[in-house]
Image (tube, rainbow, N blue to C red):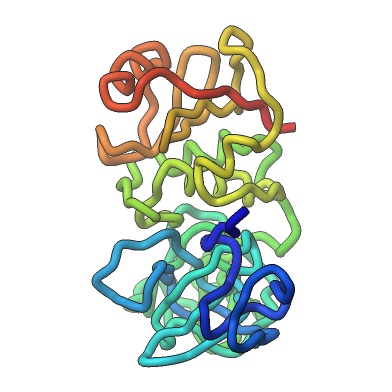
Length: 281
């Protein structure tokens, strides 16, 4: 069986050391650890900025770098194993994050002062290293390694779950623009919404909807409840309750909620009927 190129780093000239004996390649390398330093880094299947993206990596997430050439780095994400190319300028030395961003979007200020023009913006899920704190006019900030400050209330220590219920996290992305391959508060796709929301409550999930279709365990349609996943070919949605579907979709081009039965009827014109229903343990 051919290995999935999305989750396995192999080319005719180079492959991950872990794949020795499974694939043929001229060289096998262990790879070097690094961290994402771009606020959101698009990961592509080819080293070509004009190609569509497969997924995105967030600030502070760690990767293993197998190759650097022509301004691109060929990497594998530590969080979900996804493999692809991103601009080399988007990665830097490995950091040791202390906190994770919990707001859908927030700003990095040059200092603990919200009236200053922000340096960049972070998405929920981004990882930062806090080295101190400060307060300005009653607002508390965390000071970050490398400079700048973020709103302290928009962060939680790494390893601490944002909520018990991942659906409540997913609802924070309502009206976020739909973006094919998106995985951030600036633009997100259907499976990215599922993965990111689950990550924020301490659960790992595969990246793409075809991978998520075997996640958890199968249930019957008439047993659907809050938090269950509904799959179509190439699409996934989250049940907000027994009658409401929450999903990032190309119809509204946003993260939206709609009546589940109405969505089944509408989506059926494009995809067919749902292909499965899953409950996350």
